[in-house]
Amino acid sequence: METGRLLACVDGSRASMEAARVAIDLAKRWNSVLRALYVVETNERDSEIDGTPDAGLTARLHDSGRAILAHVAEMGAAAGVAVVQGLLEGVPFDAIIDDARAWKADLIIMGRTGRTGPGRALLGSEAERVLEFTDRPVLIVPTLQAQTSGSRR
Image (cartoon, rainbow, N blue to C red; front, top):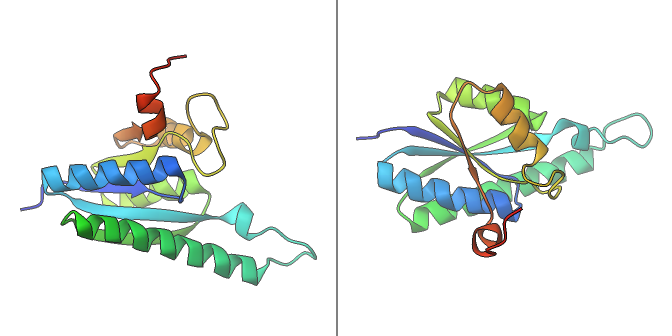
């Protein structure tokens, strides 16, 4: 019997893959349904040279997202956890919040920082925005390096 719905937000960064590992572990422990979500960022997709979106870039971003989601699904399968995959387009924090609400997620799981790097000293901008605007609980997972470095700021 399933006991919850977990939403893991992934973008291929080390932080998001660490969050996916934690999400898989929690899904297994709690017998929960796990959804992995990748968002193709609209402003990346819409980068224009001559006033029109680059269709090739859009396709590559979608391919990258599908590959990352497939990798998370493989990680889940290795642990005995089925992973529902979601690929969306939009502003990442908006898409995450909307998907969490529509999917009725009990917990959103995210890495501390995303693929664009730290951005801020402690928390990535997408994670910060999700924390600020969602009505769902959020678990922010630090990267393994941050957990084992022993330094605190």
